[in-house]
Length: 115
Image 1: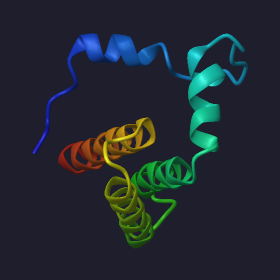
Image 2: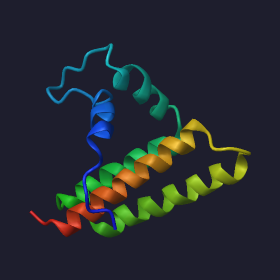
Image 3: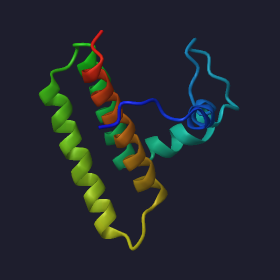
Image 4: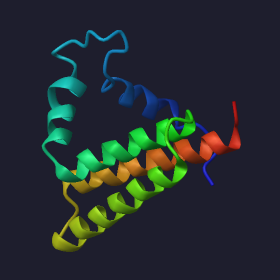
């Protein structure tokens, strides 16, 4: 079980891809310019995003855990289909697997440290 924070270098690198929290993102932000369009045009990554949101909403008490687990099952099924259908891992699959790992880390971390 992973219970430690990611290395500072990872956080520093990933932070450049975050959206604006004040609701006014800059159009030149790599997250807005490249990552969001990439994800929205992928059926797989749209479902990964729904699962990510369900994890957060489960933690805040707005969604039942069974709903999040249903989305997780669907995402894993889609990932397996993509992995089986390609000779090597695509960017889409790599991003999907990476986000599911982050979601799982978040769920595990949240259950270890309530409140």
